[in-house]
Length: 86
Image (tube, rainbow, N blue to C red; front, side):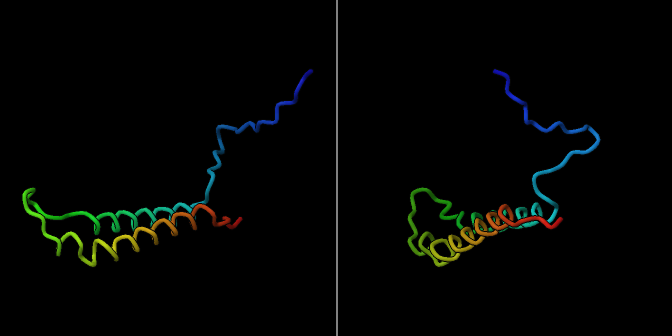
């Protein structure tokens, strides 16, 4: 029983990427927003024996940073799912 090989052969002169430049730019913007969100979440007390609740449970770490991270993931998903213009 012989099966037909349906793989495409790509010539070395033309390499076709999965996404277009616009998609990569949107994904890169999403990654930058993610980095900003995780940076907002980081930090804290420099003294390991000290627990400062106002610093750890601040608006920036509990509310703002997770919202920024979720927005970053939505931007990355949009960049992946957006149909490129031909």
